[in-house]
Length: 304
Image (cartoon, rainbow, N blue to C red; front, side, top):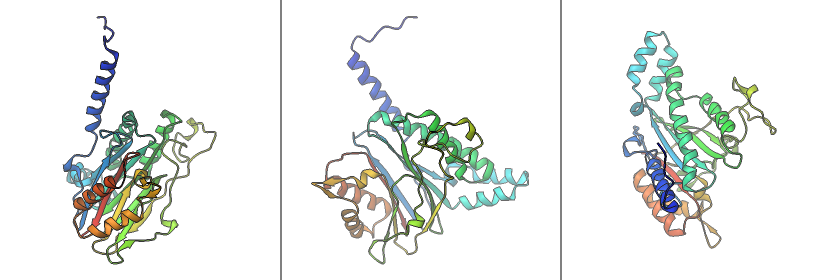
């Protein structure tokens, strides 16, 4: 069978891009994937620069929704693995959140985001099966895999955090903007010690130093140190934690930055609302402030 060359190359490429965008829509979180935790509200979204898709991406992992915890507990109990059982019981009351930002904001940058999306979720299944939780090991392997397969002029910043019903937030950062906490009682963003904001190079820029296959990687610039976790705690009722990409930081109007001053003012106005309403209010305010110059994403986590 011989394939005919397209008679209208422009129409062909337009159709290909439309097909790509349609596929990309299905890796965005569905409403049912939004985490549901006692005493914690979560809501977020992506604002693509081109209105369809780009380099920003968001993944939710509500463990009790995504995995059959009871079946895994029975399996681990039968295998005599009380350590896995304990971890599985703990993640019932937790949810994971991934925000990543591929350099650039073209629709085709979604491809790299989709690659990481699938690598993370597939790796998460193996992690839950082997350990009853997601460990730093997953991100070391993803980092080295992307180092070995990605273009040198493309990189990904990422934050992976886990929020639990006891209001503890533990996160790992790969060159991603630090989260901010709005204190309902103090009515402002809180200062956070640099010791609680450990970060590492973007995903794929340096191979990991502590993986078994280290000797199969070559790097002129050396290797990345082992990932470390930061741990924060939402202390008071009504406290709001914001995760975001640098599209929020870089949003300017006539040289005046939206972040943090204008963002803080808007959060102060709407702090009494639920997480979804806070997100929608910030999104509207953000878009009214100035035209987009990049993809932007953020997630609102509120202690109720």
